[in-house]
Image 1: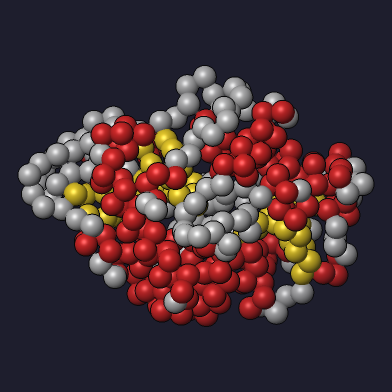
Image 2 (image 1 turned 45 degrees about the horizontal axis):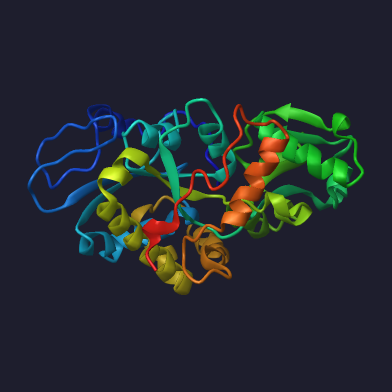
Length: 343
């Protein structure tokens, strides 16, 4: 369910985004600055929330918060939009949206540079990394080392390939003998049945889809192969300027989002129906099965939704620093803030 560089997404939103769709009070015509701030005197504070990809069960809590009136109760009018070609991160950083969905691994480039992007992770959608490597069971890739001599569909990220190299070599394989094929696998079933032996997927969507298709696979969770890879994936990010100047609004938004995800954690079937009501083109059976799985991941062992554990956050970025996978070392505790979640 990770962000893909899909063409044509969010075209209907681009005019409003170019004009600025930051926070404003009500329905008056306004303009936005580089921090995404807009002000006028009417009732509701407008918020734009940009997704990382097309709507799916990673996003259910947002739609629950809208449907159940949690946003309205918090004095907010929230627009949930799909990402432009540049992605959610750039849109939030530029002030085109106040909040968005991203992933700790892809955020590394935003934080580890001479000019870090002005964004902060303010809540974890899932408590653990539910991604991993999948292959057809008949291929016998039941350990990472067995990727040696096999093909793997890569999105050509240096971090992605460094992680893959680590798990393959730690399991005794020769990473140089993995056949890296640069391709985007849109249809996981078709991809595995074609010329791709292994793909990195998020189990909560593509893994469930494979189950539904009755396809026997081996699935190797990344976090199980090296604990440092139990990073946060995905997270909700906010624009730093907006958060600084509108702290209480940020807390109100994240409080409503938290209620939405905690409701979805406790009521997966109803939450799935809410997502389907908002996005009726989704496959009903897939959404319900995915929601049953993902709802257990929203909180896991955490006391409440959204908490980011500093040790796990720092461990992953320390690994990236050590491997020189970022331009500049990411400082300890940089890039996240739990204070918007409430007690």
